Amino acid sequence: MSTKQPELAAFIGLDWADERHAVCLRVAETNKIRTFSIEQQPEKLHAWLSSLREKFNNRKIGIAVEKSRGGLIYALMEYDFLILYPINPKSLAKYRESACISGAKDDPSDAELLMDLIYRHRERYRPWSPDTTQTRTIQLLCEYRRKVVGDKIALTNRLEATLKGYFPQALDWAGALDTVQACDFLTKWPSLQAIQKARAASIRKFYMDHSCRRADVIERRLKSIRSAQLLTDDEAVTHASILMVQTTVNALRPVIASIKRFNDDIAEVFQQHPDRELYESFPGAGEVMEPRLLAAMGSDRERFGSADEVQTFSGIAPVTKRSGKIHYVHRRYACPRFIRQTFHEWARLTLKESIWARAYYEHQRSIGKRHNTAIRALAFKWIRIKKKQTGLGCPGRPGS
Image (cartoon, rainbow, N blue to C red; front, side, top):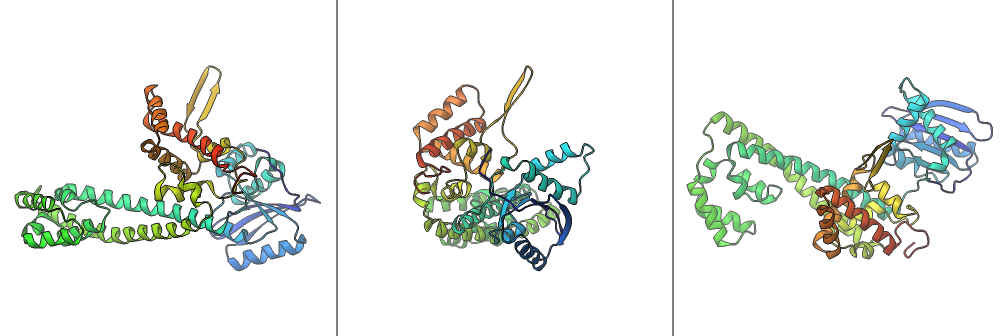
């Protein structure tokens, strides 16, 4: 990658840590190098950054760090004289191997390597600038929501496994485990004995209160409850399992509520975003994937110069390896997983909305591609199509 680079007064490598940040500074005019550390305290960090501004008379300074998220990056974003270069940890690891064959690693030398990367190979790295506040809000909300969804999946998997061990009928009677109805059901009736003691009128009222108003469904469940038999009458299993179910349900309730709060906040910010209509035009995206696609692409039209850059950065583009007579292709591992997952899930959703997408997927399957490989191939095509239609990542295109 080659991109126009600003003139820098100094080059800094900063290896952040929990207690002290290792720093390596190289002055451009004299090539003098100094290494030191800064305590992980906001006051110390801002005092150092203010002294840099004064020392170099507000001229631009390049600073290389290992990632583009976290409290340190958010602090650096506040200073307009800093040009940020987030370095992929794998790039740093490979550079460390080339510089130190022994494989030794410590924070001061990593800071020096980070500085050396942008001093000697700056043309390979694009200066990073934060997106708009609206876009960054959506990005963080979507990523954090995904983490909370992961917590929900882990809890519901645990709940399902526990119920299968002593009360499998609840998987049918309680409904989807990731709902308030299921939490209320298992709180009220954590065992088969408990629900069989309940009056039919109480059970009917429970389902009615939780928007299950189909009389045939309720009667079928009541009949099933009356005729159900215990999987096991081992008191040890039942006692411990009930406690685990109640503990899991208590942990699951706030997670379900948090996901709803994230959904509401994402929808509110997304509705006000100037690129909303653009992402609403993506087939199959829907209210969940539309803001996630915006989070993946951002609103900076100059961020990606071509569709190839989007495909490579997102991890959708495959990796080809050739060595002599050996030639094979595999999926890309070094990429932001959330972004790769976003494009993969969106491509899968387009199968129901686009005749072309379904035909392309079925063609990939017919030539022996596995499901996930065919979906990634479809996502690869969609990125190129949407890049051409919308100008995403292209300077000077509509919306820039």
